[in-house]
Length: 220
Image 1 (spheres, rainbow, N blue to C red):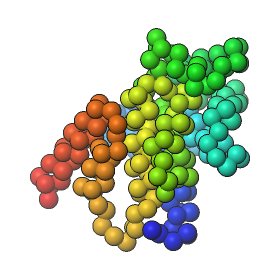
Image 2: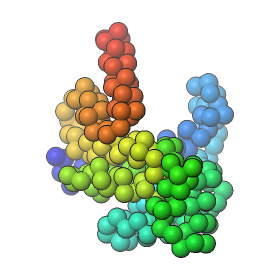
Image 3: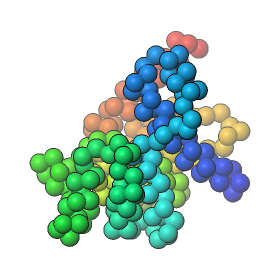
Image 4: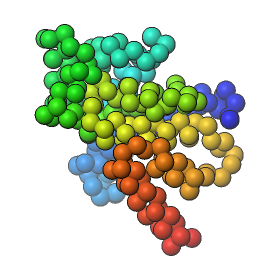
């Protein structure tokens, strides 16, 4: 396990790189050629992050202020940040949930579970914002449960919950790795597939791992 200075550095790096990836990814949807994208990045100051980072910030704020995962406080924080900056690019799901909670007094998880015909969202939003959960709970045995709980404020579908949990596992494992040692790629990828609890996410992770290993073998 890295020393405390390394862990702090990894925490900062994870949050900043996540925000950068979000902002650059937003540009990549319009500038698909690498050269065009790089030129646009160089011309854009500042880079603008989306709702995904806004919600990651909200998650970090809630965990910091409460000292634990409190779903009511988390949902309230998400809603306050949305009201302050609704232009960040939110899809219809979160605003609908916020409105239902305010109007009917239901829980955030209850409102989330009512969306999409009662199946809940299985989009990637919960996974996109998950980094703070992985950082705070990286050494916890109940990491999967923490990931699902944080995701449940806006997502209820098993695939959406499982995808968020797998990404939590990835970030949590990265925190624990010694940067002076070779990256354990094969074990890392297989660990993510084993961590998944839905056949859809598990099979996708296994396929991605196989494709990655095949590509490395051809290039090496």
